[in-house]
Image 1 (spheres, helix red, strand yellow):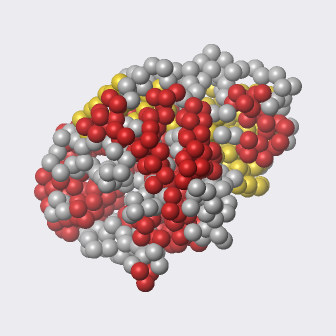
Image 2 (cartoon, rainbow, N blue to C red):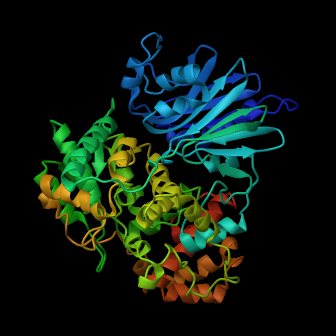
Image 3 (cartoon, rainbow, N blue to C red):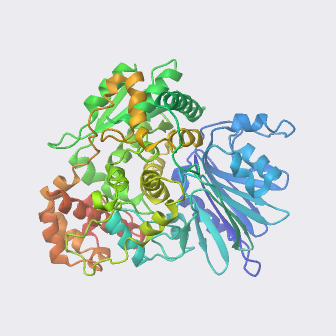
Length: 587
């Protein structure tokens, strides 16, 4: 896990400026505090900041082989198997990222078909003067590019391209509307004009300051529901989970896991307990607030049943108001997901003991867990409806102009997901895998953990698990009104303490109630922020914050609070200045 960046300069432009490379290095320093390196050859520069996880001694980057150099962010879990498949190659390190470099020398831009892991990789071929940029198929690791008149720049975080002055700060109104209504943004274009995401599974071949070629690897298997019995599916699932968790535990530093009260993380802990001879270290966050979904008690029950060492933290209202500006500041590609709050605090706590944590992200998407999937399965005349048909501000009239086209990106994802043979359920899952997963859940995990130099791993988002689960019959995903049926059946057998058939509780943060308590003070501060004043009526914003105790109004107030803090940092370029009230008071 690291941070990468680089420049591919056009032929008629000056070579890369060392000061610019230094600015890029500083901007991603938090992602790799264990060391830095770079290579500058002709008009191509690669920059790397390292978080040492595998091969602590010889794994510094850039890595070199033949006429090629590589920098990477992430982990290639099948690196040992890849080495065995390259018996005639001589390796200079034990790094998990060196086999991809040798594969690239052998296979060119198709090299990523052999990789199993989470990664953003840049490979410079000095003779051909090309740079190959690759992102893993699930989009677990981020990668951004910016095309200017003089160069093509790339970085692990969009803020690096802004802070280095490569792209001017600004907001695309269409993406802003998506953010307000959806809490995340869709597609390749980010909210920043001129900055694009390398899409999940994309490989870009670049030269002379521009993209020459694009290739793509799909995360999900093709085809519709398969025919398989529950017994056979359970046996196959057990093998896939064991293999994936075993691979995701490969590390030369201590690791643990994030444990909620749900079945996804309970599944990961169950398999980790099977594979580890020592107690697994599990971390859980909770809220001591009336009506909040505090998962600590159920998580403790699961941890005790599996012999895990369980650490808990309590996230308080005071902690949130003190640290929210710096939490939001780390979410440069904005996702107004209030789960960033406990995730940030969990990472802060985990860093005292481990450098790596496994987590249950992707379980709902792979196994069909969300209630919105059950609605999407039904035709419209039986009450079915498309996912995310309503936006956060549809019945909260505080915006100056209604964002009419906010759902265009979702409709594009729906069209892409509706492949021949797929069931309605499979299409709904694929829609979430296109944008919601990489641009909200995984983005949240990456930024909040990397802010504390912790690596997050997601065993459900693995080709073997996807092959075992995505094409299951609908009845093995949704059965008797419950999603994730097969996963529940597996957990019932291997960890009954997890109560796998208990109703899904859903994860909530009591942010609306907290906002409501201080709404009279907080609302005017939010309303006065330039980003919010541009899009919303100040008097209506102040009234919204005073009424934030309700669920709909509370979430809308949270989105505006997030946007005010985010805009201040990433558009105005101002650093957090104390707690949330002190920061917002300094317009």
